[in-house]
Image 1 (cartoon, rainbow, N blue to C red):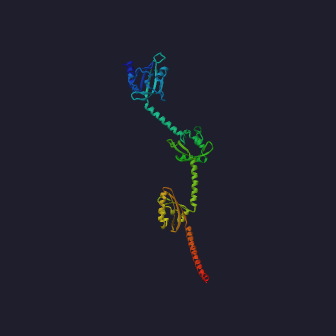
Image 2: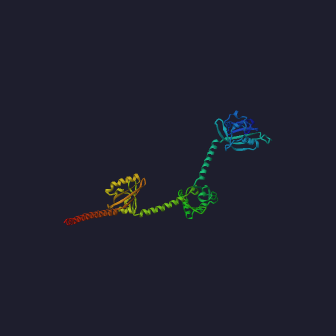
Image 3: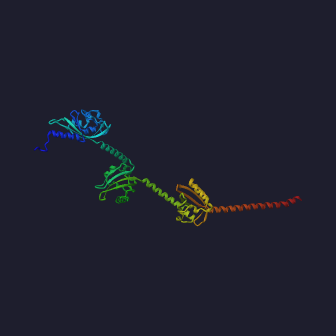
Length: 425
């Protein structure tokens, strides 16, 4: 019985041809001068050529229109098959772009070239090139690289400091953006060299803030002070994303840190200014009221409470018409309309307190926003009273002067009459 593992030369050739024609990889044989002597169907499909078109063609043929990854021409003498024939050594995983005439597009292929030798010969008599169509994968990788480049450019040119810090297995900065120099004065290389630099430059009183944020997983608004390389102190705010292992142990975190020193200064100045305004609001001897667009009181100062003889809680939430005396209601409606339309008004009214005490008042108001108006009220009752008393005194003086004039006129007449009689004698 014949050995089942024994193959005749005919059966080997048959199996080789079957494999040659069925493989999805392109296979091309070129003889010693580089002319193509054989190509399988997959090669014809990948290259977009017929058997008649490819046979006898060499790597030097300009119709290949091959290119390198950088877009420059891939010269025929540098094709993997020609290099393998020239050097007698295999060439592996060379990326080449080749024009596909049927699709009128560039196909990207990965090529291996293996020189073959006759027994006893030192120079190859032919070369076998095996290649795969990697167009889809190659274009996806190029797109990914382009996106990575854009992303890196964005990160490295951002105003804020972006970083990744690894805790386990050993602490280290895995990435820190160049903006670290602008914010802290330290270069990324200095952070890479010292895994604890971030802690070292933190203001001592704020280290507990960092530790609390990490232990509690606080991600937003972590505000701490840092000492810059030049010795100056800055305020920073970080947003952090923590990473944990399967046991819930913190292993790393990514963060973005911004310098908020100017914001802190502005907020501090604003608080000081607000404090001064509040002091003025509470101590000025003028009633100050804030109402919304419907005329509802939303704030009032102590002097205003005194004028209206009510507590702040009692006044807030009530309508301004409650404190306008009946004789001034019409003027009040007109003035509020003017305030809404023109943003300001000034007028005199008769107002009334919670206890229905009436008083004369000068009221001016301006528009703060579409839903806030502020008014200033001064009690001018004493002024009006004094003015009335002055008018009374003036009228009395004028009446006295008129009576005096009449008396003098009568006396003059009575004196002239006897004199005329005497003169007539």
